Image (cartoon, rainbow, N blue to C red; front, side, top):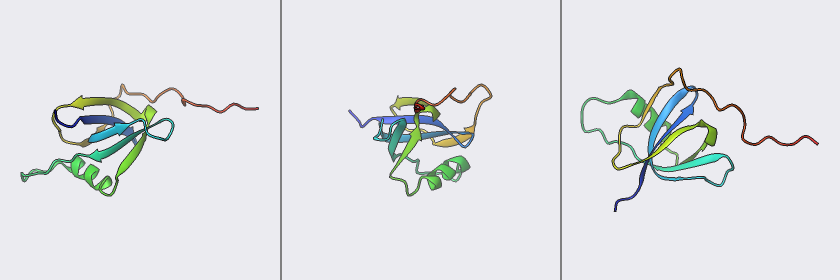
Length: 106
């Protein structure tokens, strides 16, 4: 059986990011999802997707990234990789109503 591959969609700076990773976990930071081992397409054609190239350059020197749990829209285990991309958020996606952890006031 081949190594697992995950498609992760999350919100960042008002845009929807879609990336492919080989490793994903809850991580050691409370409330964060840890993404590592990014998978990028190697373009063999002349047509290049600018959003894919933007993502590739943004995460070029990143070994792992931590995404806040409430920013994650969806995580899918997939059989083959697609194209990582950045797109505009749909109008029907709203932010999570509040923080997961709120400290008590004494």
